[in-house]
Every structure is written in C-alpha cells, then in structure tokens.
Length: 286
Length: 350
Image 1 (spheres, rainbow over the protein chains, first blue to last red):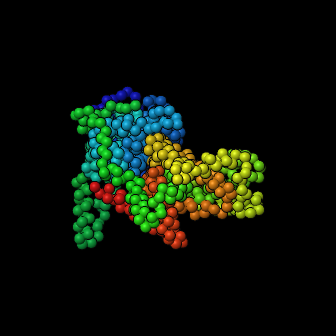
Image 2: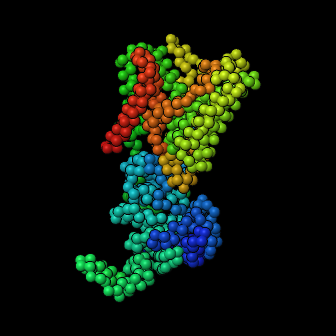
Image 3: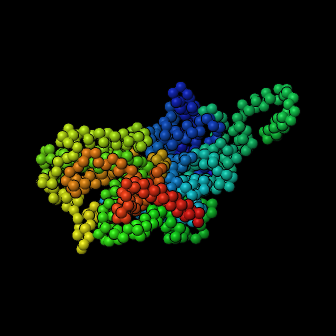
C-alpha cells in the first residue's frame, strides 16, 4: 500500500450529526481522511452519504459534533470556504457545460485573462495548452481540445472534472458516485485516476455504493446505514466479502436470512425451485 | 497552482503542443455556417429574379434594412446564448424613442437630455426583466411577455395623456437635434451610394459582440449560463449577474435603435414596434442560436438580419405583392432552420 500516514488527518469528523427539521439524517459519524489515502464512504440509497459530503464540502453546516480541517475546528458557511482550504468536490453532474469546448470547461469560473481593460481578453493559447497538459498528465489524450465536452465519454468527463479540481489546488478530492453511471471499462478508467490522485498525495473521498469498486482502490472504509456508521475499518482488517456483507445490510440481512430459512416455503412449482436456488446461492456468497 | 501528477499512463515524451486543426469539418460545425448557406441562396434567388437589387444603391438599402434589425438581433442573440428570451424587445425600442421625444419636448431641454433619460429608462426595462427573472425563476417567456404587454400599454397611454395624440411632436427644430442625428441617423455619401450610418454601427456592434463572446471571460460566462446554469453556478460563475446584464444589453440596443428611429423620422408613433421582437429572435435563430441556449454566434445574427433585409427589399425590387412578405419570411425561417440542422448533422457525422 502506498499509504503515507501523516500525523494529522486533513479532514476529520468526530461524532458529527445533522438534522433536517425533525428528520435526523446523520448521527455520530466519525471519519478521518488522510493525505495519500483513498477513503471510501459506502452506503445504500438514503444512508446519508450525500448529507455527509455536503457537510464536508461546505454546502450544509453540521448540527452536532466537531469538523476539523488540518486539526483545526471548522464550520463552513459556503462551498467557497471549503474550496479555499483545498476541499474540492466533483459532483455527479460534474458542473460541466456539454456544448462548450473542453478547455473552456476546464477553466470555467477561473478563466485567465491578459491585457488591460477594456481590452482584457482570455489567454486562449495558454488556457488551451494548460488544459491539454493537465489532461495528458491524467493520461487523457483528446483528439481535439476544442471538442465539446458533450462529445466525451462519461469516464473521460469524470476525468476532466477530476483534473480540473486538482489543477485548481485541491488537497482533498470528494468524488460523488463517479462510477455510478458508467460501464465496466469506463469505471476502470475512473478508478485509475483515483489511484493516480492518491499517489500524487491527495486525500481522496470516494463515495460509492459499489463495494467492488471501493475495494479495488480504497485504503479506509466507512459504511453508512440509516444515517449511522455501520462499519469503519482500514483495508488490512477487511475482506471484500465482509465489505459486501456490510453494504448489503449486514446484521439486518443476517436476521432476514435466519427468518427466511425457518419459514416453510409454500409449494409453487418452478418458482419454488428458483427461490431455493437463490437462497442457496446467497448462502455461498456470504 | 498546478500539482504534479503522474497518471497511470505517464506520457513518455513531453506533451506535444496543442494541435490547431483547421479543417473543413471545423468550419462546418461553426454555428453560423447554415445561415451563410441560406444567405447565399436568398441572394442568388433575388439577384436572379430582381435585377434592380444588383445596383450598389439598392444594396445599400438592403444593408440599411438589415442594420435596424441586426443591431437588436446581435443583443438578442447574446441573450439567447445566455439561455433567455426577450419578447419585450420590440416595444422597448418604441419606449426608448418615446421617452427621449416626450421628455425633450415637454421640458424643452436639449435633446441630449432626453436621449440620456431614454438610455436610463431602456437599461431600467432590461434590468427589471432580468431581476424579475432571477428572483422568481419564472421562464423568461412569461416575464418578458408581461413586460411586453405593460410597455405596450404604457407607450400608448402615456403618449396620449401627455401629447393628446398617438404620436410625439416633431423635435427636429430643437437644440442638439442635428448633432444627435449625425450620430444616430446620418448618411455617408460614397459616390452615388448613400450608406446609412446604422450599417456601420451594426458592424461595429457585431465585431464587439464577437470579441466579447469568444475572447473574454464574460463571453465564457454567457455560454455557460445558457448551457448549464446550475453547473456554471457550482464553479463560481455569477449566472444571475450575467443574465441581468444580458437583458440590459438588449435594453441598450433598444435604446440605440429607438434613437435612430427618432432622429430619422423626427416623431415617434406610440403603437410601433409590436411584433418586431420576433424578427430579432428569427434573425438570431437563423444565425444558429439554439432556442434552448448555450449555443450561437453574433456573426450568425448579422447574417440572419441580412437574410431578412434581402428578403424584404428583394420582394419590393422583384415587384412581388408585398402582402406576401410575412409568408416568405416564415418560409425563409423554416428553410434556414432546416438547413442549419442538416449542416450540423452532416458535420457531426464525419
């Protein structure tokens, strides 16, 4: 493992909780994120993953617990403040404009201009070149840096967004379900870049509901269930099977399996046979 | 700052310089190409069937007709690239002209005072459109349809109340009139050809708009605000300010055209301008602007306005029944849009 353990975690949550009105979306979440590590946050839909990243990214403030950045207690009012501390988020929709060229998207919101007003103009050549170089560093070779982002594949788009975040000074990279909408090959491409970012010394927070993807790149794992921490473990103390088990519902699933085993299944002909087969298969995999 | 990052497939050689591929394909995917084809077709058609249009003098008239639509169309095109419509643009021209005429005449000021007051009013109308839009999140179609109706009412009611008629008084003998006319409505005599100054203003505005769109940060923001407003906001683009600014730009153009009409004809009819908003939108769409925003060009809007000018004047020179004018305009729009779509699909296929 290429883990370079630093003394102080870049991002640290201690018993953090968050409520939306009467609904407690998160409670008692403690996670440490270190540089040069990929921290995977797993969980089913509605487990509280997005609430957690919203707190880390500065979109929402936490109600309970302590949020530390570089060991210093912090409370963000806007995403900009998080960004200024180098905490960058790559959202699912990627904040890209499909009809605009790659290089314009790369610099959108942080354009470089030269000259004097009112003749200040974009440093087009420099921006195109920088975007091209940064993308090549990530191993993305585009035929044409002028092609619209909409013509890139899903994986390439993710990588452009990641490259952009890194170029603009991210130390902590939050990736929100980067492989969710991608096929196996494209997911592989994105996972490579996650590793590349980790090896470059960034702290990566990888949010996913796919334990297989998480286990390929992850160093630390946190599984959320119903707003609480179901599991928190380093890679050394975990197998893929255990991770999958926790992801699939853990203790709850055990209880369900137990219950199903005791029930006398009614005779339903072929359906009966299939049900038994499914039960048998899940027995093996767990 | 840039982080050194060695990717999974590190480049063996230093990155090659950015390729500048200037190919046929690259030209064909430009938004204004379809309209260029359309302009050539319309020109060839009318040059063939209406011999009088071939003279330089008639061509200057064509350019003049194009310019009054074109000055508005370039602002409307920028607004449409920014993802919004302005249905009040046509009557806003009249509002600006009425304001200048009535203000100067009633208070017997130098006309320049009226001109400046009209500028403030026109920019104010744009600001209100934009502010209502970003505050209410209503579609711009609804917001500007409301301001369109309200301005139409104001134009008529205020003019009648103050002047007693439906038109403003002649202001041609007032102080500053000649000077203002030199700027907004003079003619340049080039041999036998009288070229209206609005043509030059039009070309200047198109050049500035093209520069802003393609070579400045604000241009980037306009494309992004229309292409993906939420995404643009997330990376720090001031989407709301951009949109309000675009509506104010349309206000500025409306002021300019309004001043031209006032100083060209000395008086203003309060009911004018209704329906012109669609001409501006048509010119922008023929020029390659997408109705959904995020795509288009300023040069395209100029070509769209030129197609409009050739068609209006061509029908006259060809001695066709002018009653058919709107029909041909509609048919041209349909054809131009079809050609646009076709050209883009061909370019994508390669």
